[in-house]
Amino acid sequence: MTKVFVGGRLRRMREDRGYSQVGMARELSLSASYYNQIENDERPLTAQLIVRVSELLKVDAQLFADDQEGRLIADMREALIAAAPEETISLAELREVASTMPGFARALIKIQNKHRGALERVDLLTHQLDGARDSQSMSLPLMPHEEVRDFFYSRSNYIDELDQPAERIAGEESLRPGETFDALVKRMRRLHGVTVSIEHDDGGGVVLQRRYEKHKLVLSPSLTPTQRAFQVATQLAFLEVGDKIKRLAQEATFSSDEARALARIGLAHHFAGALLMPYRAFLAAAEALHYDLDPLRRKFGVSYEMVCHRVSTLQRPNAQGVPFFFLRVDRAGNISKRQSATDFHFSRVGGTCPLWNVYEAFAQPGKVLVQLAQMPDGRTYLWIARAVSRGYGGHGSPSKTFSIALGCDVRHASRLVYSQGLDLKAPAAITPIGMGCKVCDRPACPQRAFPQMGRHVVVDENRSHFEPYFAEPGAGAKR
Image 1: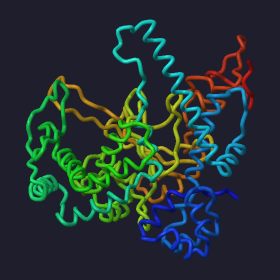
Image 2 (image 1 turned 60 degrees about the vertical axis):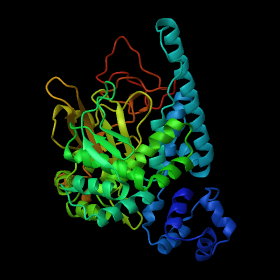
Image 3 (image 1 turned 120 degrees about the vertical axis):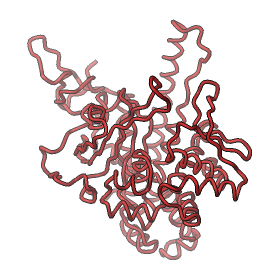
Image 4 (image 1 turned 135 degrees about the horizontal axis):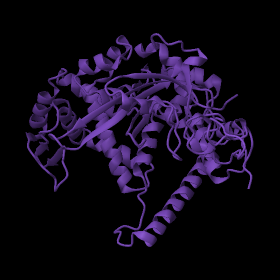
């Protein structure tokens, strides 16, 4: 039986309901030391305990599913392929390590990530010494956004400590879609003595959306009413729940001040989204509309990207929505936002999959594209993708274009309007995709850009295959 280690998740649920560790242990008929070991991931949460905890805390037992294990397996697989491509390690072996020794698995992944970072630094230094001697920087950024992304992932992309007060404030102000900006401006002035003005501020050549000084918040006139409301809500987060934001960022295991600062911004944005789209009202509307994004966006007076991000955060205990994976990607395949309430995983090595509908969306701007996509491990997801653009100037000014995507496990697809007309079980309706060519083991993919690391590629001058980099299935690398 798979062992489930969810100590951090269990700890947050216990604290949310006001139980002490001793009290929780007593309710579950366990010793305090045994329960402490469960919360510290030194012992697994057994199937029997999952049932008892679910009944006690009144939560869905699915919250204790092994999503973390799925991600550990994917990350280990990628790390081992990169570090030792000549070794063939089965999925069963990886699952055994992830389930029985999760601490070892996480340490292995960290070691490989550090090794990868060191190699990137060597490459950067070599480039600078050979052809860019006038560079002002000789160090590679530590990618703090990856740390922040993992922080939100570990909390299922939901922060109860901020979501609850945001919902309370929305109720106090009786916020109504389309009128949120004026109401929030009045609250800023009434409670904090802060005035809000709309004026140009080039920020020394960089267009600023928001600039806060003591008792004054300056917003760009190029922002839409929705964007202005979001920026005011973000500033309210720092003013009203700033202590909670600082504590959450400080308690996390970030490696740099940059990561902690970025986390504080992300937490403030979470609060802002929760303020404009209060949890219970938003969840009720999302379920009633079967997650039809455009009507939901209009109902709450927000942008398409905002509503997509919000539906990916609906993981409040006792009131969960569909667990979505949310991301934003540009035409070059750069993923600038990636947050998740589930365990979908893409590789950090060699890009993503060209068969994924998130890229097709650029060819059909404004249209919602739907795709059933299956990963090599057999898990199938329903994906929704749509290209969006926005700019801040007139003719000739630069603009931004992204593809916004939402994905969920196919078992939730029937709850979405986008599954209408799809045969969710027909093999012909499912597109096989992967985590990136360098780590994808699909043997016959016509879109393959690189051979899989560690796989022996067939080279025969007398034969040509439709699928590039054809490899012998199951063959290991040959030196």
